[in-house]
Image 1 (cartoon, rainbow, N blue to C red):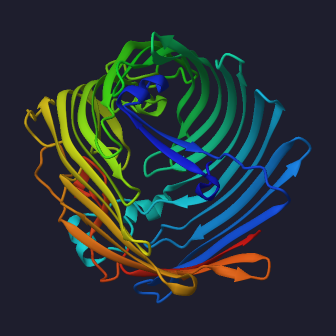
Image 2 (cartoon, rainbow, N blue to C red):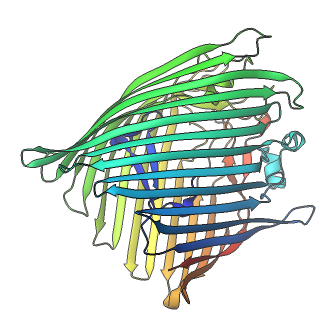
Image 3 (cartoon, one colour):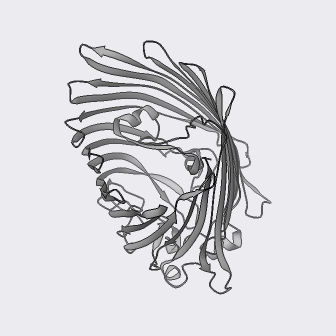
Amino acid sequence: NVELARVTRIEVLRGPSSSLYGNASGGVISMWTDAVRPSGVQLGSRAFWGSYGTRPGSGERVVQWKAYVSVTAPVGRGTLSADGSAWASDGFRAHGAGETRRASLRYGVELSPRTSIVGQFLVADSPRLDDPGALTEAEADTAPAAANPRNVTADVGKAVSQEQAGVSLEHRTASGRLWSLALFGLKRDLENPIATTYIQLNRWAYGARAGSTHPLALGARAAVVTLGVDAQWQRDDRLNLSPDRTRTTRDQLEQVSEIGPFLEVRADLTRTATLTAGARYDRVAFRADDRLLTDGDDSGTRVMAAPSASAGLTLDFDPALQPYVSVSTSFETPTTTELANRPTGPGGFNPVLEPQKAVNYEVGVRGRVSGVWGYSVSAYQADVRDELIPFEVPGDPGRRFFRNAGSARHRGVEAGVALQPLPSLTLVGAYTLTAFRFREFETATDTLGGNTIPGVPARYLHGSVRYQGPRGLWSAVDFTASSGLFVNDLNTVQTDPWQTLGARVGWEGQLGGWRVIPFAAVRNLFDERYIGSVSVNAQFGRFFEPAPGRNAYLGVEIQAF
């Protein structure tokens, strides 16, 4: 439901800070849509049109487009912002068309110099999201734009709509304490035909988060204590039908409740050393009420609970040199869909699928030198128990089931750099090196300990160079390279490595009272054929989902000021 054009700030939290967010938060991507109060009405719009070329066989041109509009204005003592967007695509591959519409409304007001409240309402509707499915290696090589014939016959895809609302209240006391309360609710409706089943899901969910942040003085040193609690509830009405929708194969009500108190302390130990430590306890209760009793009553409950803890130390020797080290634990339950999808067929929840747990270690260093260049380098290891692994069964191809691997170890190195050698030239790069392996993992037919976990490339590199020319002209070049990756637990099939190059150009200037930014781009400039994603452990060799070849788009952004 989030329109990225409205996002003003994105934070990626790893290690100790993610302990504040509980279940499944080995890391957190936090997006902010703060609206700065303008002096008058501000209008903005952005639109683009792009093409993937022509459809093989028919010669039909394959296009996609998107339009976005926004308005922000002072209303009373607060700020009102609204936006809307529409997107549609024919899809690079056959049976890959889709369309989505989004709208949001946000109003924030300062009730007093120390108290503020923000309310938001968001709606999204995707009446058509076709799924072309995965191909065999031979099909991907000879006809990458084709669809899985079974997906075309069964009209595989989804139609989904979602409405959500939230309100958050913050109050800061004279002593500097911050009290916060957030409430949210959402409604989601899904129709998802797959090759063997027609799935309908109606979801209601509600939640609250209450917390406080207290500054403390520890002698001459400062500390901050954050504590709070999350509470959430979800209700899914799930109905599975035969592909022709004449026979009910599953009819059950699924309910989930979660409670998670948390505590974090951040303390300055010395002038250069800062300690962060956190603790949390999550209890997640699942309940299934089976309403299809012709094959017996499969109703039941599952309760998954675990404490999580984290600790980290940062040394701030200089803005150019900030080493850090952290250790944390994480806890990730299966989703209701993962629990409900049982390869043996009955309703209820899978009684043997367990939550994934991990102990994570990280050491790194980051810094920034005079605003000219910044860098970060980190090495990590995660020791994982009961890792959730997708798989398929011969009688239900295209449908994902899940099982636990006994144990696994994730190791990796991540490095990033941003460099501005000249005021007009900016270089950004990121590199990832991974070694994710099963340690103990046995299925009914295979012993997989020592194998590489599928679906993750061992090496990944992305870089961009941007030049800001005279008179508002700008240009950029983007480069991405990836190693191959295994597509199954047996490590018998692997994708090829690939590299792509893209180019963007544009102009930014003023026309009357408007800021205008026309732009154009070409992606995959040299028309590289490669696999963009894979279907892990798929049946019948259908692992491969090809990425688009050379494609281009052009657009314009207009803002009133």
